[in-house]
Image 1 (cartoon, rainbow, N blue to C red):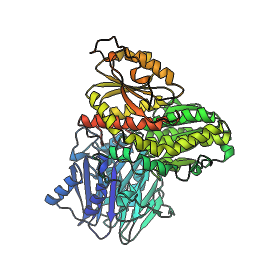
Image 2 (cartoon, rainbow, N blue to C red):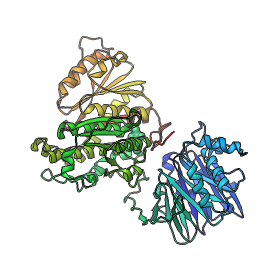
Image 3 (spheres, protein in one colour):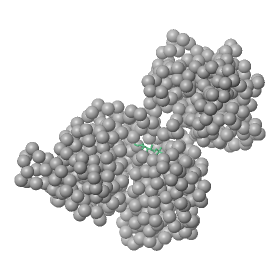
Image 4 (cartoon, protein in one colour):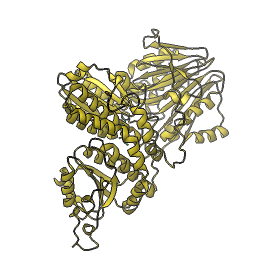
Length: 625
Ligand code: F6R
C-alpha cells in the first residue's frame, strides 16, 4: 500500500506532506513525489529514494504552496524511476492525482481515453485517473472525482487537486484506508492516520465510496451521488509510551520486535486470561455461549505467517474444543469456491487487517453464510470493519517486514480462543484447561529465558549460515512452527528453505538431503516426540547436519541417528547441534519454539550481511497485483 499525505491551510504544504511521508519511511518506499497548486498552476516534483532525496531536490528546485499532496511508494516497474512517482498530472497539467492501490480496469480506461485523443506519459494507473478526472472536470473537482470513481473498478484511495480549484482538496476511497484530518483553518489527508498524528489527533475515517471535500475552513463528506454523509470524528490513540520507530539498543527492528515479545504477551493476556481459575474473557468475539456451542466447523484462512498461526490455532481448537477445523490459504480460497456447511464460522488472521487475499477469502466465506471472526493487530482496518467479531492481538506497531511478535501473539490469541471454546463446550478435561491457562500466563517468563539463550542460537547459526539450502521439520502442532521457521529464514537470509511435516518429508523431499544443507528439527516433549526421534534417526542417515530443538534435559535427541562408526568427516558421526527449549506443554510449545527460530533466521541473515528489516521484493501489506 502506498502512502498519501495531503494538506490544505495557510502553512507550506510541501513541508507538512514530507514530514508525514517521513513517518512511513520504515516501509522502505523508493519513490516519492509532491504536488502543489500555486499561482494558477500545478507544480510537481518527483524523486527516487527516501524523503531526504526530496529534501535535496527541493533545495535546488523549491516548491511552495498551501495546498499540496505528497505520495510515496515502491517502484513496481523494476528499477525505480522518478517518472513513475505520483502525483500524476492530467494531459493538460491542470489536475494532479495521487493514487494508492489498484484500478483493475485501468488498461480499458486508458484505451478509451487514448481513443478520445489523450496522450499518456507513463504506464501508471495514477495518470489514467488524473486524466479521467480531467475529462469530467467542469469547475467542480469533487463532482469530477465522483464521476471518475463510478468508472473505476478495484481497491484504491486517492487524493486530487486542480489548478482551477485552488481552494479545494478532494479525497476518496474504495476498500483501502484513508482518513481526513481535522485542524483549525487547515485540514489533512492520510492513508495512515499516524502519519499526521503530529498535526492532529482528530480524523474522519472515510467509508467505501465516500468522498471528502477539504477546504481550509472545513470538511464535507458525501457519497458518490454527493449526498451528505454524517460521521463522528475518530480520535487517534496516543502512540505507545516508547516511539515504535525508535530502535533503542537494537540494530534492526526485527531484533527489537523479537525482544518485545514478553511485554506484548502481557498486553495481549491482560483482561482476557488473568488466572488459571477464572474463565477466559474474549469480549471482541461477539458470540454468546450458545453461539459457541452451535459452531459445527471452523475455516481458518490467512496468508504467510498468519496462516501458520492459523494452523496452530486450528490444531488446538480441534484437540480441545472438538470442532472440525479446515485450513484454507486465503489466496486460493475464492477460486476453490469451498462448500460452507451450516453452523460454520471462519477465523481470518492478519497483522495489517488489509491483506487483500485474506479480505477476499473472508468476504467469500461470509457471502456463503459463515460467521467471520478476525484476529488482527492494526486497528480500524478493512477486515475489522467487515468482521462479525474481532480479537485484537495488541502487538503495537510491527515495523520489521518479517513478522515476529505478531505471529507469537496470533498463536497466543488463538490458543486462548481454543481454551475458551473448550471451556464453554465442556469438551476438555478441566484440569488440562487449568494447566494450559497457567502455562500461557507463564509464557512471558519462558520467552525471557529463551531470549537469554540468544548466544547459543547465534553459535549454531554461525556453523550453518553459509549453506544454501535448509529443511525445517516438525510434527503435530509444531509442523506449523517448522513452516514458520522456514519462512522466516528464507525471507530474511535468502537461504532456500522448506518447511515440512517430518513424516511427509520421507515421501520424496528426503531425496534432496545432503551434507551441504542443514535440517532444523523440532523435537519437543509431547505426543509426537517418539515419532520425531525416530524421524531424526532416519534423517541423520542421509548425511545432512541436524540442528535439533529439544526440551531441556533431553538425552535422546542430541545423539538421535548418530553413527559412531561413521567416518569423522561424515555429519552422521557428529552429535546434533542443539537448541534447548524450557519445558512446556506440547500445546504451548509453538510459542516457545518460535523464539529461537526467529533468532536463528535473524542471525543467519545478519551473518550473511542482509538488510533484514526490508527484505527484497517484500512489502508489509500485500495488496492486489
Ligand atoms: C512473513 C509475513 C507475511 C505476512 C502475510 C500476511 O513474515 O509477514 O507472510 O504474514 O503477508 O500479512 P497480514 O498478517 O498483514 O495479513
